[in-house]
View 1 (tube, rainbow, N blue to C red):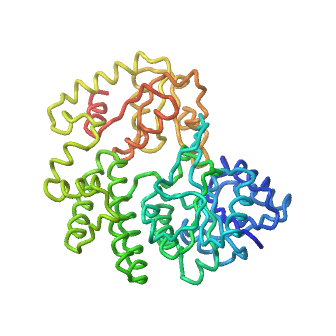
View 2: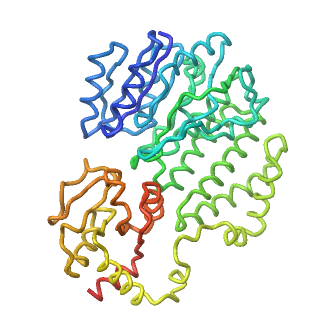
Length: 449
């Protein structure tokens, strides 16, 4: 078998057809497609079985839910191909991807062959030109990753490459088997790059990456804990290799990921990432891990600023989407709540993003204003986990709202730690009249109502 494609699958029936169809259309015939159903509770398994009946290259592995890392490890243990590919079940690939990467891998005897770009897409749009995610690396040339450590600092796109199975198994390269699906690709790529003495980067792009899946690992619940857990696992892998080069690369690698997640984090979680950043930055200085071969001057300047004056760095770089007057208790919460109620009264339709306890609480407040239930809707990321309606108010998936109806008011009825992510999601779908609610404002709304 030339290639084994691993497809980890968990409750993605909404997107799965597009993914599996792109694999069904692959021009490479001597390959296997291992569909790893990780205990899905929707109809993902039925979709997998349909493709398995159509195409003998599809193989179904139905297992209990253990999370992304363990699922990929199971796939690797069952794979028989010379090379392994990983395709996320909410993405899709060009029909010649596996053939092109495999031909290059065989002609160069590569440990890893990786395409340089990715097409990013959502339910609403797709980029016409791919985004180049591999920079400062020569194309179409066999390189040793130790000679080009910049590869360790690229976006962790585990799914744009073929990995020689022998290289993975001989060195015990595995994903961390922590529950869920968050950051396990970080340690996998670090290990794979550490052992790849022959890596080839292609200038072409074959992978289409979905940005709108609400179940993707970009959700920020307990992210810092999960990330530091992954770093601990990666550090053990680095210690196993034991070279000074890998020690230097590991410390630069961790700093890069912490800084990227600090920049991406919601406002209420940024400080936690920054505290961890400062702790790691001090370790880098203490251990003498600031070799210019792995650190550019901008990164060193940021590291020094965080160590010397973390608070100034935070004030300069933190997000400000939440009203700072509210955080300082200088805003009139009662007046703010009254203003929200008046805004709601003027709307012809109101959406509540989130159908949980907070959503039902806000629904009760709105109904007391005399607004008809037909003029209210709950929005959710995925309707599979929700009833068709709550108290006579319909529930619909956010991406199913017609374009002409996305000018209406949306109230984020989720806990504060999730509201920044929700607001980004709403903006991405074209909703531009959005309200977030803090606990204090919700309390005032209940008092007034």
